[in-house]
Length: 372
Image (cartoon, rainbow, N blue to C red; front, side, top):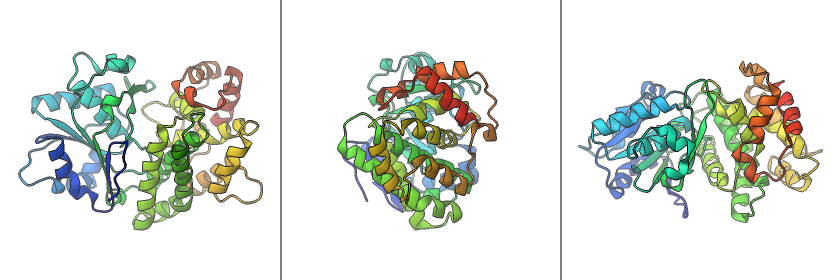
């Protein structure tokens, strides 16, 4: 097992799910709300987690979390939590379920509507419900972060929920639970992890350990994502992709940047976050080229690029190999108001850690390129 200090307690290894009973006991949770989605129930993934619970433990299942979390979904889960006198949350799923779990621990224990805490996360206080995360994808890093995104409704962009009080208490990272993840989602979530590591590495925050973790995460994704997509039963590749996802979550604490500002600007509840991240990355990297040549050269070396160290082209080549969309138009995105999108991206909190923040006009040019 690998335990990481200074973060939520992390259990990482094939078979790590067997530790869930001990982790719940430490948190004094006896009736957990098992938060998940219908796909994981149908695939039998949730059953593996339920089988690992201590004999006789009563648990309540809520499987109504949509592909991207919404306020309505979170509040419905919180109502079930209260109705059944639950005393903790176990979020079993990808980033959407784990972000929803962070929302549930607030909505179930704080007065007033959840949207109030999305608009003002400083209102979140200690005493939120205990939370154990069990990731079933390898990419979001949400299993250890203290932030998440929740959509007020399916047609609007996500609002950020960020507070040290919603950081998971423990994360159980068992690569076994990712073996049934379909190829396209394996690719999209894997490149989401790459995006976290990329942006964190160039972040203006001075954090050498975090930078080292980010650079190693980049190496790990490039070395193993093709194998994981080609053969989901490749246990070695799945282990490394789960570790890269965890490294991306660690790297997030170093800060992100324009790639994630754009992903949030483009995002609604119908578009996959990881695809938005990796489609946006090449244009942002090209914007960075005149400013960050030494750091981009280090990233190129980590990617194993030979000849001209073109990171943007390298990302595009990986996306193409994995069958990921090269532009937003390929995803079916129909936004066209460049001015509104540029204004939204420029106002994003993700710019706070960016080494160079694009101007409104530069964002406009980047967005035009990403749209395709």
